[in-house]
Structure formats: C-alpha cells, structure tokens
Image 1 (tube, rainbow, N blue to C red):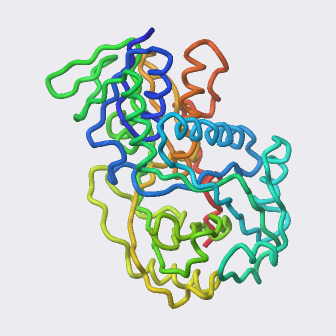
Image 2: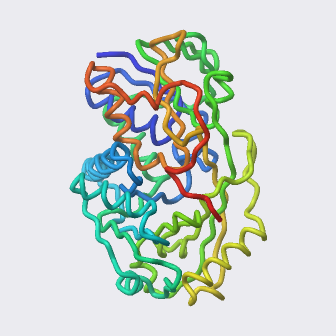
Image 3: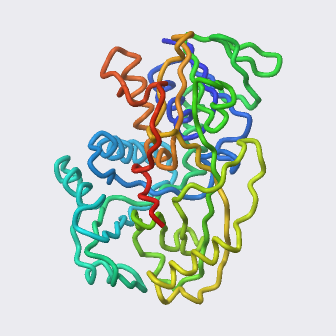
Length: 369
C-alpha cells in the first residue's frame, strides 16, 4: 500500500483516485473546486467517446479500454454516464483521417461501419452530405456525461476509502501544501489541467483556450441521432441528449485564456459561423431557435499528446495532463496505465514525457476551416 496525493479532480485525477483506492492505496484527492466545476477542463455536460484516432492504434485501443471502464463505473455506482448513440465521421475524400481510422479500428477488432452518404443521412432528421465522399460510423461510440462522470469518479473513490479535500494546493518539493496543511506521500500526482503550466513553469508547456458551443432546438428525431465529427472542418456535435438541444461545437483552437479567468460568453461571430455550418449540413436547423450557448476550456499540449511523467528533480512527483480537447474519455484507462507502470508493468509511451514538443493538432481535428 502506498500513500498517494493527487491534486486535480478532473478526469485524469479522479480516475486515478478511483483506481488506486480500489487496490488499497491511501489516497488523498485535492481540488480547489468541487469535482466537475465548469472552470475546469473536465466540466460541462457532455463529451464524445470515440475510438477513431487516425493511424494511432495506441489511442484507439486506450479509448476502447476506457469505454469498458466507464461501463464498469456505471455498474458499480448505478450512474447513467454513457449514451451509446454511435458517432459518424464525415469523410470529404478517400485518403484522409476517416480512411486511416477505419483501417486502424478494423485491425483492432473495434466495430466500425463504412457507410454511403445516403445510408448515413437516414440516421439524422435532416442531413445534406453533398460535399461528402462517405461516412465512417462507430456504432458503439457515443456521449459521456462529463460533469456527472467526474463527480461519480470522485464519489466512487471516496466510497473506496479515498479522502477528498477542497483547497488550493501548491508544490513544495515532493510534498503538497494545502492551506496550513502539509501533505506527505510516497507519490504525488499533479493533474490540475491548465494550472500545470503556472505551477511548473519552464517544465510544462500548455495553452489554455476558450472554446464555444451552441445548442439548437430540434424536432424529437434529434434525440436519437448519432454524435458526429466533421474532422476536416473542425466541427462536431450531438443530437438532443438530456434535453440540452442539438449541440454544435468548434474544435479549432479558440483565443488564449488564463486558467483563473472567468469564461466570457460565446460571440455573435461564432454563432454566425455555426449557423452557416448548420444550414449547410442540417438544413432543417437553419432557422432553428438557439436554446443556449456556452464556453469551455481546452488545455492543450504543443503536440496534443498527453503528459504523464515524473518530475525530473523529484521522481516521486508525477505530472499528468495535456488532455488537449480529446482527453476526457481516456481518463479511467490512463489511470490504469499509470498504475500499471508504477507497478513495474508496461511503461508509458515516451511521447507522454516532459520533453520539448513540436506543434500539432491531428488528434483533434484538421482545423482547416
């Protein structure tokens, strides 16, 4: 049994607390907010869970494993977290992200269907695929309830014996200081999202960006539509899940934002762009009433790869983050991989290390629009 302090109760931190508490470790989970707070990058209502990652078999397999673990969390707690509505990828050609994703998923034995545009159109109440070559459909993909998910992870960790502490933490070598309390442990994990770059300046490079999303009123058929991703145009969305409205969101990096800053509202210009896309792709929604708009944060590593590595000067201190807009779904599987590496099992990939990284965005979207 080890004593472990985890700072940050987002998807990575709360998942790790849940995982380690199950095996009997003495876990303290610290966060300045309540789990699932909208100021954190794991806040908000929903996230896509999909296995398609282009040619990257490691991320694809990890997403599939994460799906299994989310279902196990549901069974353990009784929470309803995953809506298996499927996800459709809109392919603009025959040699892009969707083609390499299909080959990777088939190689891993993950269910995937190659659809004609007309076949895919039947899954949506309104659809115009005139600019598409075909559609890649993941029938067992879907949508996770993000805020409820991290709240459930933290509560399940507490039920397994973890101590959950609310407070602002700061590093002190291999210790954690929360107010007047000094927490000592065999291992310390800093998984506090966009705040990592401030706490470990010069070691961790992250950009925190503001992202905008919109919800439109749709007819009842949208409650049964799949999630979808238009990779080349950097836009994605879901049907009308949980009575939130039809979600349409942009995956292009938004403007930079300080992690402590208040989130400004969505802009009229982005709403205009969103309505333009909706009119092109889902014509019946062209004049639909906007029922809500929100902003959220991404914390992005330069190459969009995750961070999970020991501090070079304090080997018992680990830095975990860099979700980069595609990390939420992976939380439980990342926790399993980290714990396995600590136990002397399969090491984590070198690309998760604290090295200088080159800029890249391909794990999220092409961002060509």
